[in-house]
Length: 106
Image (spheres, rainbow, N blue to C red):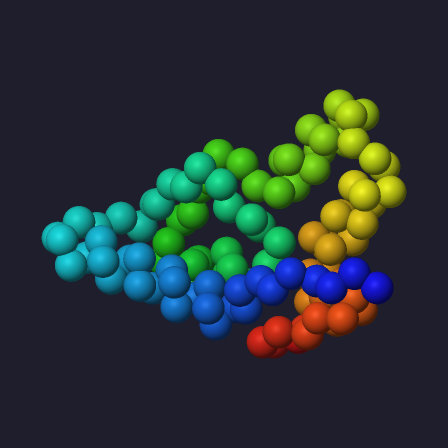
């Protein structure tokens, strides 16, 4: 059984997002349309939390983009990519099934 890596739960994601927005506000900058180069996009509540705050989030790439390119390239083991996709579809369930915890909200 593979031990799953730890990952931030939705409370941690929300806290980090709020901390970032408060830092931006502290220097008298304001944005409701932040851009990041990479956003994991494996926790549906992540974007929902930002949307609830009135933030329109933009990212150049996500894990879903990386997975699509990896599959198309045929340079990676299909079983490993399938396992990665299983994790991405249900990170909490996958973690619990592989010796981790379901994390907050799981």
